[in-house]
Length: 169
Image (cartoon, rainbow, N blue to C red):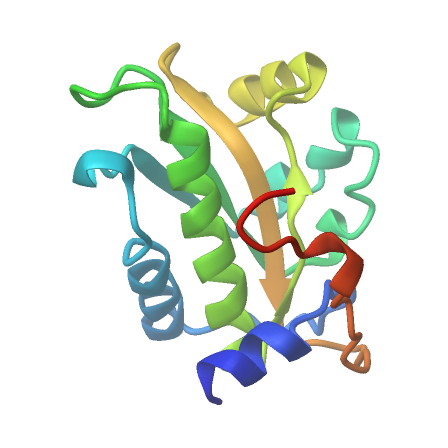
C-alpha cells in the first residue's frame, strides 16, 4: 500500500478476530513506529506489547472507551520517558508521531487498530501506570489495540479548505 493511500484510507477499527498477529509482523510494526521523527533525535518512547488476556480485560477498568480490549488479540502501549534527553519536553509530540506511524503500519499490513488516548487524563494515566507497572518517569500516551479486522469502513474525506491559510491567517 502506498503511503498516501494508507493515510487517506486508515480508519479506527474496534472489532478483531481472535487470531493473533505474528511476532515478526509486530516487530515490523514497532520498527515503523520507531522510524518516526523526534525533537533532537531523542527517541523518548517505550512500547509495551500486550497479549495477556487478563491484562487486556482490565483496561476498561480505567478507560471508558476501551470496551473492545477484552476481545482484542493484542495491544501496544505507547509510552514516553518524561526525563529523556537534553532538549526535554517533547515526548508527547515524539510519541504521537510514533503512534501515528504505528497506526499507519497496522493499516498497511491489512490489520485494524484504534488509538485510545490515555495522557493527559490523570485517572487514565494512573490506571495505566498501575496495570502496566510503569516506572515513575514513564508516561502512557495511548493504547493501540489491533488485530485482523472484523469490520471495514470506507475512506472518509476530511479535507476542509476553510482550515487552510496561506502565508498569514
